Length: 221
Image (cartoon, rainbow, N blue to C red; front, top):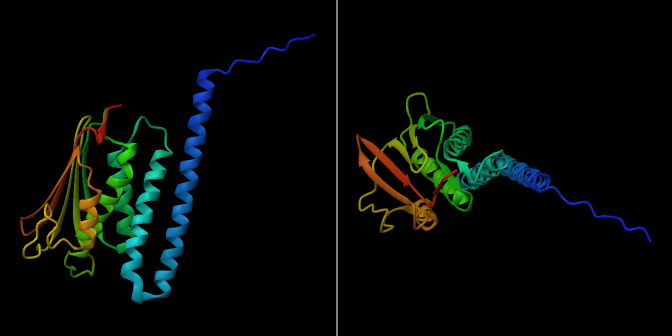
């Protein structure tokens, strides 16, 4: 009787196949989410009376799509924070016609990476903070709103600053969820208990939101 040996799998080939499948899944999810966002935008154009509500859903959908797009790129154990901020800010700016001025200072060798398990929460928080800043900014003479985003990114920690002209409501207190509105209430509930500190304060004639990120939100590569 002839005995056939079962070929042994090469571990490197197995990992390569796994990585390829994972990337393809993320790519397809990103495309599907972008497709849904496109349909929502079309409906919003057809029904201006629900535009503001639809825009919220659209930007959230685009933030999720951005995360899946970044997770589909070759990377380590996390999602590049600078890429995340840039992608979300660009999507929100395109939808709202706002001018978003970024300032990114990152360690080019070891930029901050956000834990995959917390990437969606951080993306939705960023999306809401940027959208909220635009919503409460005054319109300039050119009919556009402007906000500024600063990112400092290093291997073990990162800081994101969002600034817009305007004022905080009387009695506002983010920590106690007072006068925050639905959007910031969602941010409060999404904020991880460890590795993330968020402050919203009046400063320099406007409002500045500062989010400090550290391990376990920031992961080491």
